[in-house]
Image (cartoon, rainbow, N blue to C red; front, side, top):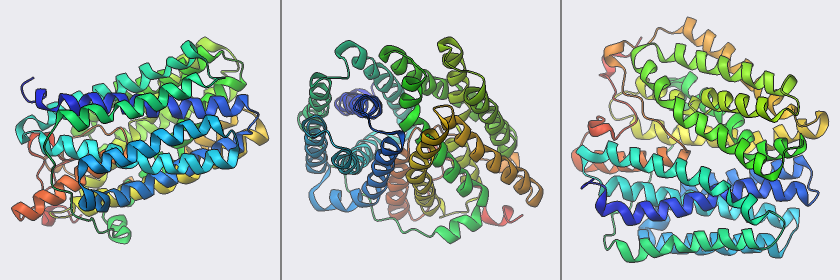
Length: 434
């Protein structure tokens, strides 16, 4: 607890901000459906959000270098808060798409600033404990904030005002509770071809997860609303999927540290595929069946990003962690930009169940690629396999690689995963060329 106490202001800010962001994602889809926006329009808003998120991840380092952590956080939070109020003042799909792009940019920067700040503020021996506590705050805030929607309703001004207040209040603990101003991370050079050669499966896995998880997070409220769920049930449906992924991520990660990660990745993808097909064709409008199935779906689908990233890092050589993780963030974002709009097109053409049908089609292709890669390349030996780290969003990976870049520069060597800080621990390069 002594390691966490100095970081409590940041964790409070994180909880408020994460809750506000999670609440906004669900409310946009739900309110958009109530306003008569088509699934394609709502899907495009999701695409706009992830496009802004990608740009924010790439630009936040320069912003922090220019004005520091506190001022960067304050400016981005102010823009995000103002954009939230604009959503209810101007109910127009084009304006909402522009605002979602801007808020995606802002939240990417806000998350990266918080997470890099937590990384720099936590002693190396306590960093794993701090990040685990942060994940608890993340999951608890996102899921609990969702239930403000049925309490205050999604129709009026109140819920948007509450979101704006939450984002604004996140400024208070950051501005008053911490006088430090960590050094901004160095710019990270991207080399997509090089990283794809290191781990084709890890890169393709991040694209596949971006396609599917972004579609689920953006359009699952629309799916639940269209099959006849109440507002409370819609919120519960979204939350159950997130909780399932958070709970099962660690057992799957434990297994992947001991077995060939590709087998665990294959097992988890098959589980997500079968559950997605069941949701698409058999669940119907039965609320209980949908709740049970979305919990199982989240349990298999949400850990796929962490498993893909861990596999890619197992293949990385000394000094390659930073460039690998930067590229993985980009590969994920490519998929996340395309996923919501593509899935929404199928929903509009074939009904709400097509959300999970389109997700299942991506899994079929990914399973074929996993099987091919397992035949084309031998597995990483168990004693050369790094430790699994659960990742909840791409900005987490960005914060880690930014910290790794700083440590590499100061120490003259890559981060070796001490204290659970890095994604995985790499074996020597000569032992990994298989």
